[in-house]
Amino acid sequence: MPNPQLNKSQLQQAQKLLNKVRSEINVLANNDPNLIFAFRRKIRKELMYDERSKPVQRKKLKDLMRKKQKGICPLCGKELPSKYAVLDRFEAIKGYTEKNVRLICPDCDKRVQEERGYK
Image 1 (cartoon, rainbow, N blue to C red):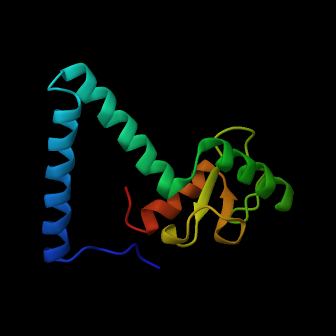
Image 2 (tube, helix red, strand yellow):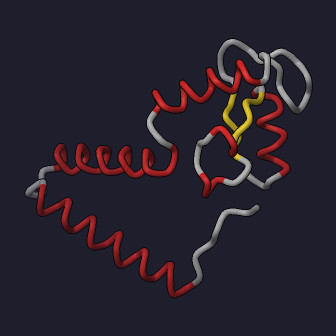
């Protein structure tokens, strides 16, 4: 399933919100470039966790899926590498859950992303 896309009106609303957030960051940081940088980083990180969950949670899910798949990539049938295996979501909007992911090798991940139009 493709990721949801915002229409023109929704994009305008998102831009207004982004402008408001930028303004609030500047006020919060008292226009200090170092604090602006730090606040942006913190907010970005937390928003990414909202979508992707925290790294420790994804690591536990990777370990679970590795065991469940018996260390095999479900796409190519090869043994998963000890590092850089990828949690592939079937539907991004549903997040990183056991029912919504598979653990695949980096080569298969690259192929899947290209097939989905993400390069």
